[in-house]
Length: 358
Image (tube, rainbow, N blue to C red; front, side, top):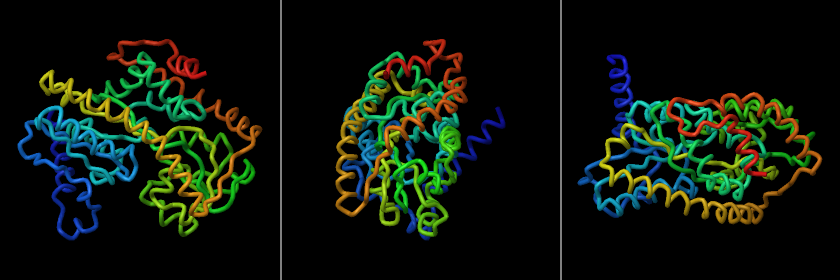
């Protein structure tokens, strides 16, 4: 117990150091003035600090501020969601630990990072499974499977509530990638996630695992010559200023999973907890609709800016899908693992998800 208390105090101090930084450091931090609330949060009975790694320029991240406003309205100012985007509280792995320990209350965690505490979340990272807006909604609407999915971190003291998105994954590159042979010449930056790393190795490509903040310099200096990311993110974060080509392989959806500390949720009065959860669900559902429009808008904007688009042949796509079988075999046991808190206990969760999306 003493060790846990010490760790919690340490994490609180870490969070405090980000929140009350020196004036010099504060100048370097992104400004949130554009998204200031139009209410005074000082009178809230409950405060919920929520982190996200990305920019509110993405509708999937902007949902954090929308959740803030909706929760405030529906609870009559009793709960204030203090949303911190732009990695203001640190990298995703360290922030996951903060949520687990209760130093902060929630996080819109990327699906690629989520597997660090919830391997079951990795089902949405598997290549060519939940790889379209339509398939994502079908998965979410299957409440038996989706609720089991959201229990991925329950054994870690964390509850998953819902999902927002940021588009379909593809390849932004500094040279054209029209086929698999072209792709093998690219030094792809990929996320620091085991599923992604194995997929790229199975495809025979050259992945470079790298934190997202390191990407701009690495891309300009040629350390990497391609990005494994969504078109929306590449356009919004101006990666197309260097990488002028985009290959649409749509092998997965970019997702944020909105997770919260179980003990904090349980500490809320039942009526406020119900209102909080309903607010998150409603905002996330509306955000996912906007993310489809967002991707289409960014496709047109990128084309207008001179970005050239490619698609692999059916034969090449079939090759990638076939080579992805090893990724499924490797991670099926982790995705299918049953934990003590699970109320649904499928014999093969992964297969049920596959069958439901055929």
